[in-house]
View 1 (cartoon, rainbow, N blue to C red):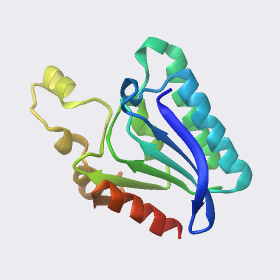
View 2: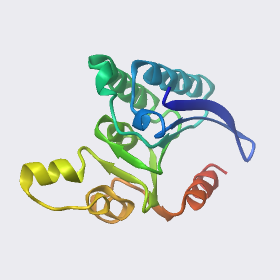
View 3: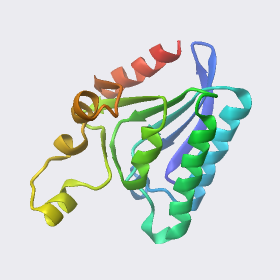
View 4: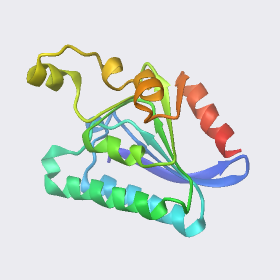
Length: 172
């Protein structure tokens, strides 16, 4: 499936995480992907440890129909249950579209990698088709757009290694 889940320690502090794998069907969310994410989120809640989501997903797996959409709804519900209970951190390192952007938007911290991290409901091609407006991926939902204009992202950082280093620093 298009997600890897697990647990580990950052500076001796237990953490749980999930990472979408864009190389598998665009990191799209299926029922099985949602179940894996929900399980690791539940483990984080049970232990009181932070949950880190490394986001790189094209949204719902359309072939799975309403089951994929239901999976997003269950993840959003788990985000609200975890709110104020455990730290929730989203790391946007690649393109995230559709349902994949709602969960990060309701987490405590959003780190975006400049140049590769993007968040938008729908991409530039649809914007052009519907409105006739030309907009780039970066203008529409890049790290700078969200860290300096929309306010969705808390941190815009150059490079993946530096982005992950800042997440570790936050948790240290």
